[in-house]
Image (tube, rainbow, N blue to C red; front, top):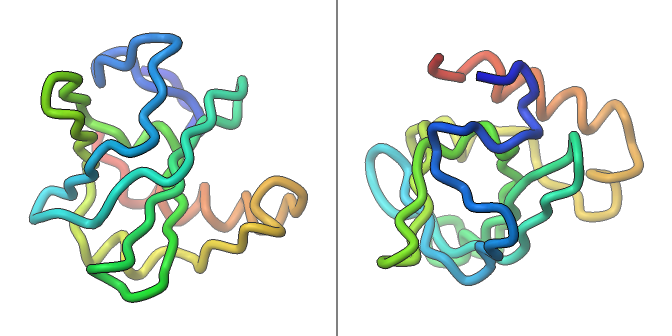
Length: 117
């Protein structure tokens, strides 16, 4: 397993070139929404999940290492976190998440504490 929170883990089953946008997202205890954006940048892979139904009007940033598995047939991404852990994550700021190192560090630190190895 790679140490980076921002890289897809081999065991998750991500196939290079697969765009996960539009896939449903399931936490360990239920659905949290759909993938709005999927980035596969080196050392910066992540999902932005539209959690509109679950947390009205909120988008959530999930580093790629939070993905436990992907079901391509069902177009579903499974996240190795509970809904509460995701809900309590640092607020996603679409303006800062790529440009502000502090925002990225907070996100990485938060999810790193909850990571199941």
